Length: 495
Image 1 (cartoon, one colour):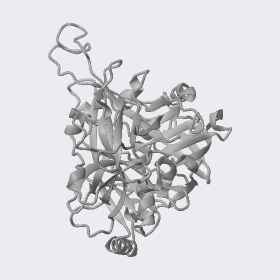
Image 2: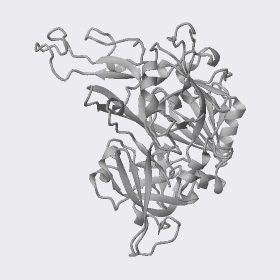
Image 3: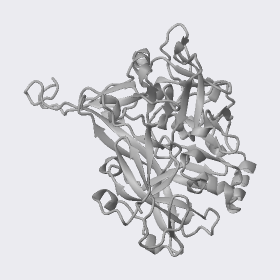
Image 4: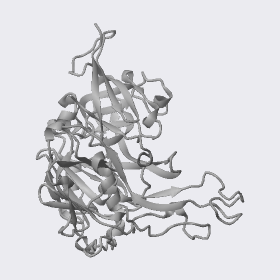
């Protein structure tokens, strides 16, 4: 009997955007009672906070020579019993399974990561996707998850899972089904140091509810509330985190505004866009009510429907780069400059639920560094400089728009929001009510910034100056944006 192959249709879900909630009320910080409640929830095992670490990988565009960065945020999980095997994973709202490399995978891509050893867990069981126990030597189900830059093939195991390490006494531990990868393509998995992926999508993104991490947390009564929140730091002085069972009040500076999940049966955390405006002018592309945006914690770009990308790029292209490094005489290295103070039009999204999200140029523009491939003048100066000068990359700011073309029902009018929005906003995912909350994130640089006066808009001129918005270290738009073919990361859509 041949083993069952379960194919997962790959759907591009790579984004990077950030937005602004208007008419929000500033929040000074968490009260002592709120902090005490959070501590009590953690002590009772109903609130679990995982610190997220950031890795940036530089890439260079073959077509433009621009140096940019891919970013990823990951935290630790543990599998097996009695000894726990630790893995670093991306907590990803755009997928539905926990995936870790297996010791059965012996490729170089797998060998550079920590691998799950089925034999090291006394309670692990080999299973088919429906939970049926597989006996030794018996044919078993497999799953292939295709990504835009590669894919994984894996098998299924039921084992004990914990969010914390040896100090945990079972507050976050439970049994669930895991995908153990027996094959992993070189790209993109070899580029980053994280081992695997933990999907946070809704139930329909998983093969069965027993694969769904949040579903199992709720079923096993591990959460004080059926929700989780995400905070991304914008400097090395802060720590990024994901909080299960509640949110961190000391990391927000406005009240939460809510928008219902659109088409929840598809499994994605997405919201409906009712209107789109550039500056004070409404663009008719979303007037039919068919536009939606997926909030994706596993990516860093702003993805735009392909049919609309060129028009929006043109609307936003009138950017003024605040500082540009052109010679070695600059006191601040080009690599340290960013686009948070770039001047240009504001981008507004009116959402279902009465929310308006506003992206400033500092949100949607990213830094790119253009490096000379050769000495243009033949005098050793590089790109027409003075002979003997140190070559310094030219730094420019430009919109981060990645065209995507998705068929119905997810597309075609789908936007995807990733790292920039998640830096600017604390996002709260309400599993019970199927809604997403957005509040301005409170960063160290925002201590004295009033949430109600953060942005000034000149309606006479579509160029607006950011007064107080802090995005932190702006990154260059990804290599995908410079390539017509694109290397878009994909996420699974089960069909």
